[in-house]
Image (cartoon, rainbow, N blue to C red; front, side, top):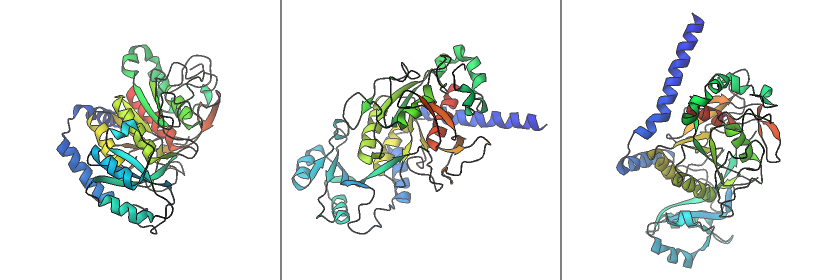
Length: 372
């Protein structure tokens, strides 16, 4: 009786998850509805740690910078006369988004409020930093406990017939990818580097390569590990390094990802700060039927942004005993949990290692959904 009940509950859960995944693309959202969602959520979450800080406190803000969205591109000249424009991005300039850097003599909060109140400006926010959430016959497959736990061997038995359904593109916004790794060769598409503004997102840190291996490492090649969906293609987008990423570079990468129309956008970085810039882009992706999934965070506190946005699938971590990980963020905005401890994957040096973190839970869940 218990086994029958478990099977029934599992079937219901799978049906709900698949409905969540595929209903997005079937639903059409007009701009008026998106604007209402943005306005409602913005009012509810506008409070920021930065706004309650001391007037000139800039902890967690990159180089005393402010991101500004102008109402008209012609206003850029006026902005440049008053402030030093930094980090220009051809992608974001099309959206009238720029970054300015303030000297240490300027009162940061006062200038921020003045810019926000300008008739030329639509939105202005601190350029805060986001942090990375790290913590088959393949030689290390026996150590990949999460794959059989999620029923992947059964799915792989039907791999040939499932290939057309499992060929998905996953945009990975992270530290880039080592596309020369033996288990990732041929698994990546041409990507984008927001830091160098070129098409070579080689990983100099390692987190992005670990993320990519969990998703799409080759299987049955007598090498290393098996990705949860070896038919998937990675669209690597380098947005940060060892110190995480700035909001501006994150926006640059997110905008690029949306323009490439992937099936999934995966975000393994986050912050405690709400951003209207980010939420506007999340709504755009949502309206285009792109599934955005994000790690809930590893601080054992409420779910971080961007996972906390309603249109993002927020995923926490569980361990080998199917218990929520001690580090995993939690709360009403957490949607689901998946294995996130002792996960074997590819690393930047061309080898393999075990990793922990909600970054890796999110990946396994979303690829499991698409595979089934």
